[in-house]
Length: 253
Image 1 (cartoon, rainbow, N blue to C red):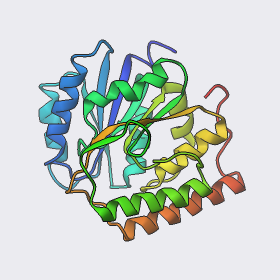
Image 2: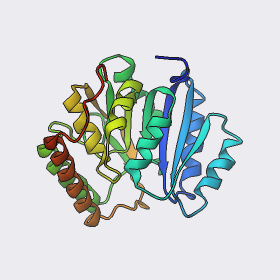
Image 3: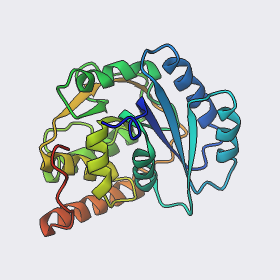
């Protein structure tokens, strides 16, 4: 690992689209937690063509948080495209994706990072269904049904054995992030599935870690419309895999 490409030990990538209200508290909690840790760090917010004051919120926070960076993507392309841009712009030896709504408490980071720091996995994914998972604010029934149905469809077709593919709390070694996000194509909600399917194809070890989480009732997920988006994108991923659309992942990913 070169000192240039990995100038910090930990990067937190936060995709944001019209998040002027939820983003500032999330950044404050993240930076406060990271300041207590021994790892050097950065927070990379990727603005996905927001039409509100999201960028202004980040720029104001940068004056108080030296480790905060803003990357802009315009026009709006989707969460997958934003995370992909952030992961490739990140400089960390370990790179974590984290949602702007703050549904995952920052003090869950040590649990998530443990398998990577121990050298037992290249990817660690937060799970709302694995052993040790717990919720301070439970999801409404329709979101639970949405999540479980989406995961059931996905498990059978792309990543069997992973119980929670859609939790927005995932960590990657720099090598895994560079390899996977360098070939990924899905811009929408199902980008997680594509990344995990590619990781399986590359033979990368994936650890699923039960985490504490708190449901945000302001979620923009539409249980019907977004489920079909995920299913449609999952079918596209499966077709791409069968047709060899993705170039060969680099050795040692």
